[in-house]
Image (cartoon, rainbow, N blue to C red):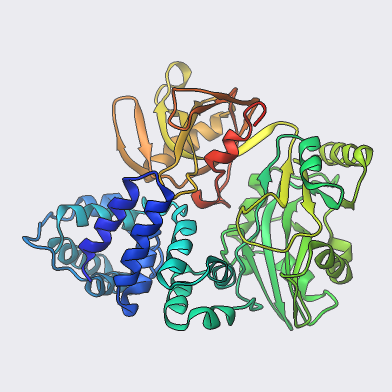
Length: 503
């Protein structure tokens, strides 16, 4: 198959708002592609080459000569081979060799193909929102129910691998993909709740209510003495968190997979700022110690628990990690619920999580089995652009353009702007960092690839014809940036709309 066929399908998916049409276009392409090309095609269409990030930026590509092929001829296999060669080039003289490979690649493609490859190599296609569509398209192409494909993806962590398994082995092979201690599981996520009372009413009495910590998500795997620790984005940070490794190695078990949060504490036991916790993830050095707070147990001593109820998983968690549980209460009445929420805020945390005790573990935000409640509404949004400041902010990138994730795989949907909450430190950081993510600019604004996530606090949402999502944020202000999250984990436009009065 030709690269041109993939590019045409990508354009077709991007040109429609219809989820059904998007899935059908992806399905038809996946049915036609050879199995040896499938991993490459799936990776490209969700914006993640199977070789991983290649370290190629806009500055490098802008200097590559443009050559337009008279007729499309670049095959998927040939282009994938060029990317593999790029990924494998390092050491003395690697810059010139990489440039030669890029020159050869771009001399062989059309304008549309070149544009697609540039966006793929620089990360502009890596929105992640297409993953959900791709799972459904893979199931349709293989004539399988979607649930086995989704479940296999949760356990494998790699959509490309899941695609090949579905195509070559069908339902039986997908069923063989199970939780493997040492291989990260895609995490289950929470949806924002309108209020404490609304979440309690929605989920009923059979719930557990936990502190929502201002920390970083971790997933811990132990097999004997071997311990591995992953972030929310499944990045291995084991080498930088030795104190957590030692703690997990001392737990009374042979094997375990735990889900939780970690954070740094002050001398008085209160949480340090989120940025201080995140600073430890890049280095094993530093004076700050990380403290774990676990809230789920997915495996214990040879038994997988993902299909058990949350209540069963919590009982196992208490057995293996009792001293390190996140503060929680089960089946509270209204008064106890309010008291636990107030206790979380008084202790310096963000709010609470309310979870259905009968729910099983499932990756992503499907349904509302887990809901988060904070004193003020907060949403995680994608930075789409930033305007140059004026007055005392002249020369600094200031006013943010904010977008919510499109669950149907389209580009983020703009829902507002804000410059409030930006400290001098953040303004300086934005001005230095954002041009590294630039796609283009005009006189007033620098436009960015949709990959930086920021947590926004707001008083609410109102209907608006100004933005394409039909809603606008009210009194939005920046709380912090979220380097632990990708654009695929930003809140959806539906989550933002749910904050409308009566929504």
